[in-house]
Amino acid sequence: MRLPLKLVQFLKKYVWNTTTFKAILFLSPAILTSIGSTAMSVSIDNRVAELNKDREAITSSSGKLENFTRDFDAYRLQRAANLIVLSGANSEDKLKYMLDKLYRLNAQASMRRIVSITHPADWQARMGDYEKITATDYEDAATVQKLQAMENEISIEAGRRLTALQAANNKLSEQIDKLANWKTLITNIGNYIMYGLTIFLFFLRTNS
Image 1 (tube, rainbow, N blue to C red):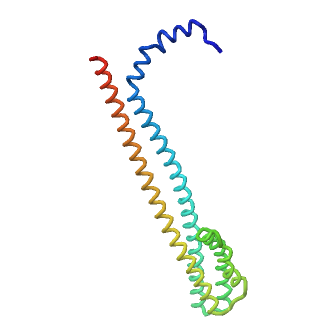
Image 2: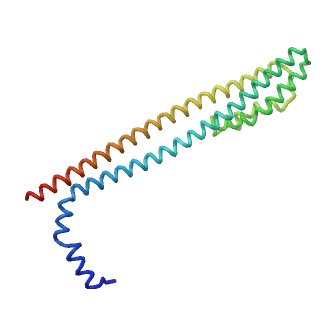
């Protein structure tokens, strides 16, 4: 598609002519500085976006783990409180074991979610023994101690995982802050160089 002859003549006379070409070449250092600064800023923005995505995933996992751990601990406290009440009332041991089993069964949903976060690859295998025991009508202290040891291990692992997630979150936050500061520095330096070159070249052109 050819442009109209008058438009071509207009462009050659007022837009793309020797004077314009010389001006672009003259200002090319400042233009290249601006382009380079913008390109680096865009690259930093892309990296920050990736880090923010990772931080959101960590925050999500941490929040879920905290909620499930809180629910799990609440069941454990309720179980302990009610067992103390039953002991004070001299209730039958069978009733105590039934209450113990009831609270452990109610806590299993939260336990599964906790273990699936701390051990995503084999959480079902890790929950297997616990679920098998709670599915039986146990009535001995040794079984209760075994279940309690399993729960304590889950709580400890949850605490370690939360600590690791918080450390990873803090590390990502530091990286994001450093990149943000680096972007500001690059932008400012690029602007200063561009402005300085523009002014310098203007006076150089004026005095030539």
